[in-house]
Every structure is written in C-alpha cells, then in structure tokens.
Image 1 (spheres, helix red, strand yellow):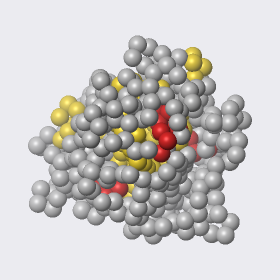
Image 2 (cartoon, one colour):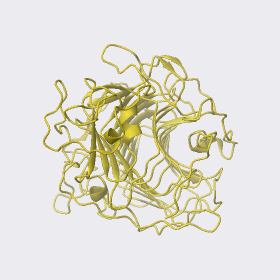
Image 3 (cartoon, rainbow, N blue to C red):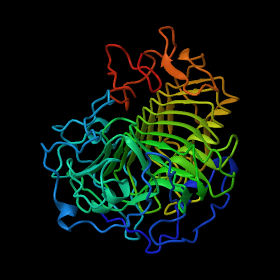
Image 4 (cartoon, one colour):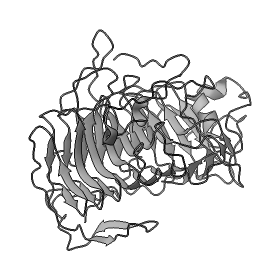
Amino acid sequence: MKKLTTIASDIRVHALLCCSAAVLLTACGGGVADTGAAQPTQTAAYSSKSGVVASQEVATTPASDAAETTPAVADAAPAAGASFDLAGYASHPLSADAATTAPPEQSFAADGTPKLLASSVAIDVTASATVPATSINYYVATTGSDTAAGTKAAPFKTLARAIKAVTKAGTTVWVAPGTYAGGVKTTASGTAASRIYFVSTTKWGAKIVPPASSVNTTAFDNRGNYVSIIGFDVDGSQPGSGKAWLHGIYTGGSYDMIQENHVHHIANKAACTSAGGSAIGVDSYYHGVMGDVVANTVNDIGPASCKFIQGIYVSTSGTIKNNLVYRVGEAAIHLWHDATNVIITNNTVAKSHFGVIVGGGDYYFTSAGNNNTIVANNIFYDNGTGISEEGKTGSGNRYTNNLVAKNGTAIKLQNGKTATGTISSDPLFVGYSATAATPNFHLTSSSPAIARGTATNAPATDIDGKARNSTTGFDLGAYQH
C-alpha cells in the first residue's frame, strides 16, 4: 500500500469540509495558509477551567527516551484517582482477546490516484472495532504528569503527550475519564495486522474540549493509517478566545475507524462562511480510503441553516453505520469530492437541512463521480430534504428500505433512479422532540421501522450493542427494538 504523505507545511486543511452540494460546484477555497507547522487551519482549542488540562502543546521533555517505547506493565496498579477499567460499552468492542480482520489492500494508479474498490468490499465493522491486546500501551489521566513514563501506575497528563509517544504500530492509548485539551494531531500509522488505538476507557468519559485561547480549529486531527478513535466525548460548546472549532474528529488516513464517540456543539457558534466544518470528516485529500464511521452520536453541529457545516462528511470510500445524527446546519451525512463506494446503513437522522447528500464534485483526484453507494435501512425524519443526489452520480447507487417521513422533500435522485422499499410513515420514536436536549430515538413497539430492513450490509449489532438478526428481523435506523 502506498504510504500517505502529508504536505510538508500542511498548508491545506482538506477542502473536504468547506463545500456544500446545495451550492453545487462552487469553489472550496483551496489551501489555507498555516500559522504553524504542526497544524493546518483545522486545529483545536480548550478551556482552562477547573479540572481541565491546562497545556495545549507539550512543553516538557520526556523523562527518558525509554518512556516513549516501553509498554506499561499489564498488572500495574493504576495511579491514585485514575480508573482505567472499561465501562459503558454495551457492544463490548474492546475485548482484549478479539482478533482483527485485515481489510483489503488499497491500490493506487501511477499518478497516486486511489483505484476504486468494488462496492461489495468493506471492512468488517465488528472486527475492526475491537481492540486486541497490543504490545505497547500508554495511559492518560488528569492526575498524571507529562514527565511520567505513561504507564498505568504513572500515566501522562495530556492527550497531546501520549500522542507524541505513539510512534509504532500495535500501540493503544488508554484515556481515563476526565477533561482534556483538544487541538491534537497524530501522524503515526498502524498496519492491517497491528492497528493503533485511542480509547476512552469509559464511553464518553474522556471529554475533549476547546482551550482558553485556540490557534487551531480541529479537536482531533488524524493523518495516520489503520488508526481507531473510540469512545470520546468531543464537546465544542464552550469555546474560548481565538479560533472557533470547525471540525470535531478528522481523519485523512486509510482504513481508519471512528467509533462510539459523541461529537456535539461543533461550530454552532461560528460564523457561517465557506471555510466550512463538520463533526466527523473522512477525507481523500491525502489519499485516504476506506474510512469507517460507526455507532457515533452527532448533534448540534453548525449554525441553523448554514450550508457549509456538515455532520458526517466523507470524500472517499468506506462505511457509515449505526450513527445517530440530529440538528445539523446542512447535511447530517454528506458525500462529496471523491466520495464513492460508500455503504450507508442503519443510521437515524433528524432535524437537519438534508438527511443525506450523495454526490461528487470539486474533485481531488478523479472526476468519475459518486457511484456504487448503498443507502439502506436508514431513518430520515423531520429534515428539509430526506435523501438527495447532487453533483455527479452514477447508475450504481442504490436506495433501499429506508424510512423517509416528515421531510420538506422526501427523495430526489438523478439518472432516472428510484428508491425501493421506502416507508413514509412516522417512525414512532419513544420520545422525539426537535428541540429536546436528548431526544429518545429508540423505537416503540408499534414502529413501522421494526423488521423492515434488509440483512445485506446491516451491522451485526445496533448503536447500543443489541444484536440484529434474521430471527427478530432487521429494524431500520440506529436502534434495534
């Protein structure tokens, strides 16, 4: 596989997040001059409130080089006040004895353009989400110290320091509950057989927040291949001074997994400009392919009606499964640029300008357009438009078994295509309110979404880890009844 390379000065923030298909084929703005070598215009911030780590950049020198490569002792007692016990993962994706399945290797043309994968090729989500035992482990806790060894007994204090220590495949960073500075960037890559993992030990227990004065606009910027980011709460609701967060979790690598995170209140106080933004961005600008976005909750993204701010934004191949997305300024799920061969299944989407936009345009490497994308088993409810094809799309896109209701426009497809198995009834959520802080999107026993899905490409469990199978029937949306 061709190794990803990052432009030396990082002058480009990935136009991925600056375009809306609602304003088709408008210029994305190109590169943005960088104010520092470490981070492009998507950098991050954090608040120096009580309990918040106070340093955005690691200023200290590690105690020794050995601390960078020596794994923590497996049975060492955790530092006082720090808990590294796993909690909150109903689907148990973090089993130490689980084996990962190596995904297919991506090939590239002579000019560096990624060759398209067959639409039937996808990473096994269940396998890819697991965290097997790795040979190198680092630990992070708010009670730690960045001059410590990064072991369970002597953890680092900041996420930035732990990221600096990660240089090899087969590394896991375990982050204890607490509040940590965002604005971090990782460039290390794993391999198909030996991934790199960043894990909040308690689901949503490790909170990533903006700094008091931010020079960056991205909370967590990953450029490495075979990297998994699991279980963090990325909260942009309390920006400090400086640059506002426009991006939550961004990945420009290949075969990366963004799973079970809560990304919310990103850019909702920012000015609506063509600089754009998104909660989760999976980008092809650095030749990234096959990114997986699985079982995340994304809400309150961008100013209302801002066409430049997206929920889950993908410009390459991959999967978008089991996500809950609501109250997004533009599209809850948006495919653009070089996006193609994307499987979008069992997501619940509500109260956004668009439920899903499937399209291609403003290309990085190819002008083929979006093709062989599958949109199935989803719920698109109470949006401006439910499903919309925009830009250049192919005849291989398929739309099956979706519930599309209470949208201003239900479905708009191109090339004479039609959706099949569409349900137009109210999904009958347990407790839906467009303005509630946490609407309840579980299905009532009378929901028309129950057992109406297709088994093809459906994930094995729902967002809560509840099994989906042919006996109970495959429900639509992120939640299995």
